[in-house]
Amino acid sequence: MSPPGTTAWPVRWRCICSRTARISRGISMLSGCRMRGWPCRAPSRPMPWATDRMPRRIRAARTATRVTRQPPAVAASGSSTESYGIKEVFSYNLEEEMRKINKLMKKYPYVAIDTEFPGVVARPCGVFNTNSDYEYALFKVNVDLMKIIQLGLSFFNEAGQQPTPIHTWQFNFRFNLAEEMYAQDSIKLLMHSGIQFSLHEQMGIEPDHFAERLITSNILCNDHVRFLTFHSAYDFGYLLKVLEGTDCLPRNESSFLEKLKMYFPHIYDIKHMIRDQRSLKGGLQDLANQFQLARVGAQHQAGSDSALTGALFFRLKDEVFHGKLDEFSGRLFGLTGNFGDRVHHLENVVIKENIGKPGAATASPVTGILQALSAVHEERQAEAEAAAKSHGSSGLTVSTSSAGGPYHHSHSAPILNHNNHPVNTFTFLTNVNVPHRFYEDPAGYMVTTTTSTGEYVVSNDPSVIHQQHQHAQYGHAQGGYYDATNGYV
Image 1 (tube, helix red, strand yellow):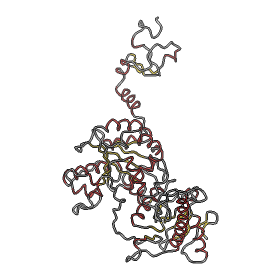
Image 2 (cartoon, helix red, strand yellow; image 1 turned 135 degrees about the horizontal axis):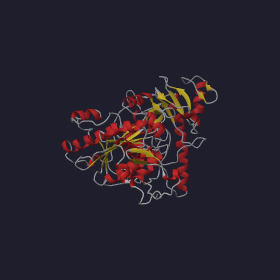
Image 3 (tube, helix red, strand yellow; image 1 turned 180 degrees about the vertical axis):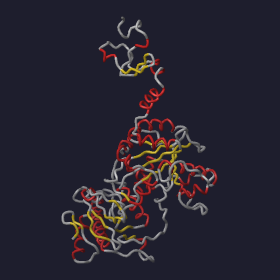
Image 4 (cartoon, helix red, strand yellow; image 1 turned 90 degrees about the horizontal axis):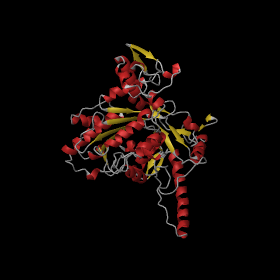
């Protein structure tokens, strides 16, 4: 008898490594040559004749095992969205899908963007020069406190056509409901829309990993790419935070827009584009209904919303603006002066340009403290500028409304507390999930008082905490003072 593996040995007895299936006379036999102690001369992969003669059920199972390695829950949700042309991306397939996207960019340079994030949870306190300064501070404090949940990228060519069979990628980031801050109503809406937060917790994409892949792709810093959005200030706020790998956005709007333009040279925000079109009002779905555009996928998921945003952009481009869009590039709705002369009626907020206008908010103990601190800081800054000029150095521009805090300077270093964290004071809105770790964070936040409606005013500014404590002790402020050791006093 010839030893196994030689040509004299019948073909059906050839050995196959790695314990692959072997067929002999219609019977499936699982074994390997090493199990019998025979020398192995066969290739490590199954020979074609072996898989061809396998029963169809076994061949199908082997193929499925080799191709699909994601958990069953992901496979189920992924197959449902792929039928609409939307690909679910988690940590296990990020590398593969980013390679596919890179190959599309030359033919499909129009990228529609949408994000899902945990809502709005806070409102800044303090003194601001203009409404625009306050709007940026409101935007910044919320993006700084929370994390992105989903990002949708949908691709189009210049004619508005999309690639097939997949045209949209939905990136799912790591997000743990037990550890993150969020507005409860927003999370309920996202759950109702089909987002499975258990999958985000188990296999969501790490923001740093995603940033590495996106920065090295053909998407960013590309003058040939056009980004299509709808009411996109928060979308780009979370994206810039991910790309920069930081917990805080730039301290003022001009710095934010400067960095944004570096990554995204051409942005078209539909909400800004239609601001002067009286016949075009409402949200994304309202406008889609008006133009009879069909949605693919579930509403309030980033992939579906980004695909609908792109389709709406091309309909507007052709039928309303007739291809003339240059004037809209780089303007985000929600920033860049889009709010006009709106007057804010907010407790613990003073906007200087609104003083004297009907309905303008009056000062409160918190704003009184911050105004006093602002005046002191401006005096110190003026002294520093005078000293710098005497040494031949250029002075610094003073602005008491920088978004880094209510009395900061636009071009100077931020004021730091004793833990070397920028100081900030804001009000938590109602129905907000605040994780325990927030008050244990090195930033040193504490609840200093409550508003007339029962909302917590939070600060990590030692001056605000100390002076508000004094007000509370002498009965000049409503609510109590929260101390990490002693609780409310």
